[in-house]
Length: 186
Image (cartoon, rainbow, N blue to C red; front, side, top):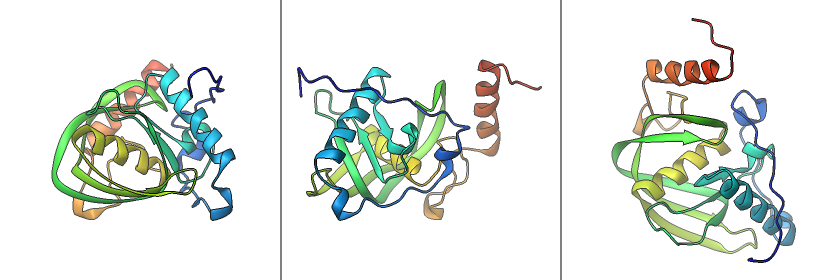
């Protein structure tokens, strides 16, 4: 891919309604060159923003696709993940998370320590990956975006893993955003 210019896409921010929508499955006819190009654009946008993951709804596209890097495996190439299925396991672990759709705001989020992820590549190839630690965290964060969930949403849709964070911490994250954007009302 080096030497090929790839367009960067415009990011959407947390109060954009597209970020709260559940994304549509990518259908068989959608796999191929156009989806591969869109994936390259997502990676370019993620990299230009110094991110480790980016989901399609974060650029206004409500399809089940995200790209990610592997923080636990520096130097590994990024991947594009279509129609992922995640099976969570292991202890719930805390870690600082942020989001390109809520820039410069970080807080502690609880995530499963291990993920078995099955997905399809943009060209249509089926893949299964076992992820742990930060790699697992990135996959879970991006998967949530495909379901209209932001990292500060304190209620988890997967009851076996409970809340990502307390309701108070969730409110604090939004308060930080409002302060940084001049909308803060004490």
